Image 1 (spheres, rainbow, N blue to C red):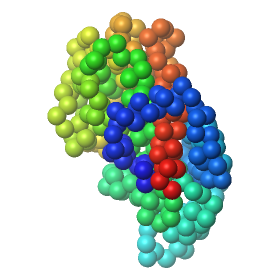
Image 2 (cartoon, rainbow, N blue to C red):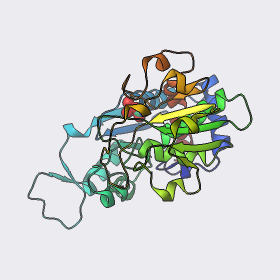
Image 3 (cartoon, helix red, strand yellow):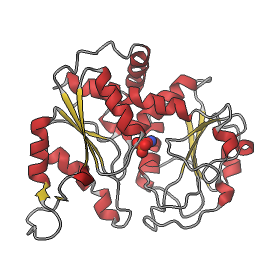
Length: 311
Ligand code: CP
């Protein structure tokens, strides 16, 4: 694997999930593959799971890990041909090349502005690293994608499914802040690759990018959509059409124990209790969010292994 920017960089999703599950059983089987190799992780935004799970994954493979919170470094300029007489002290061209001197793999987290849709969709931060770095780049959540999360989600569904083709529902939930569509986008793309009966439910106005949701059934009635679900993946996202706007925070869309019934509750975390989901669900027997978070290690580990094998 040359890079991991989108789930489409995985050649065979089904095989990769199985490989990740084998790694989960024996996480130190390839503890020499990353010897004398360094992963540099760059965070433009906060993280708990991605940072710790990716570091753990790299160390399981014998890699060294260096982490930089980019807010502690020089402000970067991403535009070409610009006169840099404002805040940015360093251009991405030098920065990416310099980081490449210290890294065998660069991993980047950079959220969208949620103000300028075109700019966000250009994925200029992560794509600039792909363009100017001389080593492979891994996406730790970009403006429109969270492919490591989506792979962990797929691994979790594979582990827990009790029927060949489970019913999986992605449900929007309320949130006080404007959040990106990245997790939902990558989850939708991943579900299109799996043998699942998949649908999406959200209030009107919260449609995701139709190029991503394509032929997937969308139901505006959450109760109807959740009927007989095996897995309910809950996530807030801000409006795509009215880009980055919180149209409303209708608490009727919060996930309750009653609505969930016997389905497994999935969420990428962090999650706001009693806003997105009630305590009884998170503390109940059907929540699989900790297992999902655990699987972030093996999602990152299988991707790093594939990238290391190609160095
Ligand atoms: N799910 C996830 O990406 O968590 P963090 O934002 O804490 O990394």
